[in-house]
Length: 294
Image (tube, rainbow, N blue to C red; front, side, top):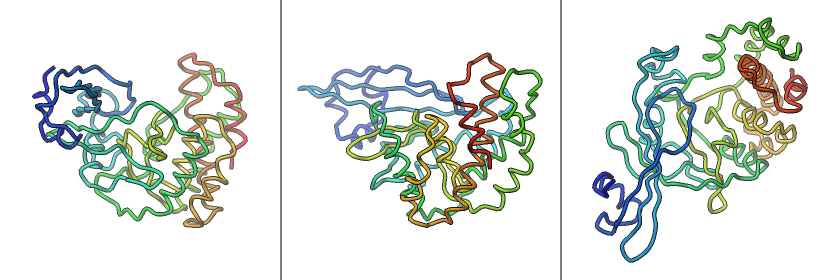
């Protein structure tokens, strides 16, 4: 790979001149689970006279097959293939304090360049607090490319056969109550949501929680993002910390209901996904999900 394979404007935004770049390597990076196909690469540059620079290049393309191929072209569907590009170009992603997206270095056609933020995860309690603070101060308006209620879209196409798996009966009972649970969620206020706010998408840098992979940015019932974070580590102590960050922006009872309902529905559907693939549930997983049943 040559320095010229990266736009000169991207190098400048990263803080160097293309002529300073002596050697460039590129390798596949990460194993994202988003619906948009394409590739993510880590570009590493050695600089003349010493120094090193890493950046991320993500290339997107629409799906041409599979269950989400048609939906990925709908701007407000969770699988929309251009959403992360649109999110960065809009300038509306969080930029701190406390929580931010990786810094944008450039966009060319369907390719996105952002800073590399390392691989160090934050403390989960810090992530919950900064999530609440982001939701407290954010005043985003709906955009045509925002996801409009990711959970409802996913459940609408999910017909799970619990008789085919060996799983805790309480999880199947939660799933069978999903119409009533979704009605509860429908009555709750919406807030801006990352859509997959789990530890795999969180880093820490310069005293800031850095959130990567914004392909499912949109609006969902309050508590939705926190449910993803809690399920990632089966941590039942995050709600008070998140509410502290929110500073009463939303009614705590609404937040609590949205969080518990999302944990229940997401947790049950994930348990079925693992069971059908003969993946053992993490220790305490079923108890955690059932304990959150609203």
